[in-house]
Image (cartoon, rainbow, N blue to C red; front, top):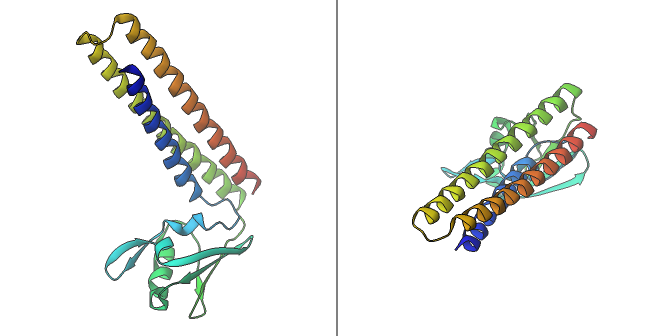
Length: 185
């Protein structure tokens, strides 16, 4: 019973890490990366659609992204969505393909982005703590209903703490790596 709870809790924590990594991939580092624009939502025939479903995104050069829409008619919609996004990038097109130059980051902008990374990682850690709290509530409920002994409760509580420590450490490593990427960029 405790093992199953810990397994479910670990799976939820792993998903939190995956969400954080996907979220951080969208933060500019000064190098062109298709992940930067993949999740930009484009209004396409009245429906908000992620850009990656509408076009091939590639980085032919370190400072340039190219976006080739599957439907050339969506070119204007994609350009508008990029301009509206928080990326601060200006697209240009030749009728078939959108070129998105990635300018070098200023020192001030690098610091802002590093701060944003820390904020998003803190949000991820809050999610981990919420997962731990829910699992702890379940453990207390098991003990209250006499499904587990008091010793099992404390052992499960220790195992739960080990899990949160491990995943919290992973989030710190992800944060450090992304901040280094931004500041060195």
